[in-house]
Image 1: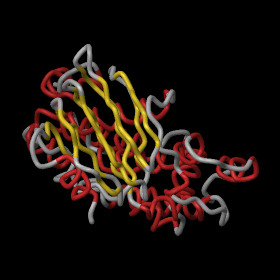
Image 2: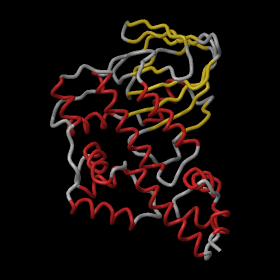
Image 3: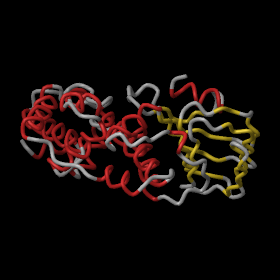
Length: 298
């Protein structure tokens, strides 16, 4: 079962408002779904799923039962549910409509996290089946991922994949039993050595017009994705997605100043799927549209 089969089999094919299925993200899937009042069939979770409500009827309540544990949750924007791999959900009943952002994580992320912890075992089945999780960081990760899906930037893929790894680590930290030694092992990290850093930065420059994933960069650095994200941040002072976005922005500014290419061509060369997405991202970063920036440089 792939990540998107999970949502299809559990919720059906209807009422998908947005999906990352065409985004070429690796190691994470996401869907924004509208759920009407309904009762879902029993379902065996074969992937780990996180649900975060975005909108809801004022009287919406989710009643669910997984592995014999019954939960009743009043739905509001930001309500979080965890649905770990291995749980059998015997019952899900929705009293009124709500919209929910579903994030699907593969088992391989937990194996990679175990490696990052120095061999300390992390199993998706150790994650607890929880409702109304009071975790602001999980909520922030989910809403940032949803924003990335709605308005993709030039670094959308590497950002989404980084968020998937961060979400996996956060689940292991706050939603599963963990020893203090394991927690310390997850936090300890060092900067990239000069050779690896130069190799990674050269790879980014050489592939700046292409889709770059976090796994691509980790492979260049000969590190696990979890180790790479933390060590890159220590070395550059920012996560990989932000660094790539800044490099593409500077390159786009140089192309706008030269006046040799149309704005739509610059958008595609900068890793954007459309001129509209490029314009929105450029305005957020600079306070100006690409066209206004070009005029100001003449």
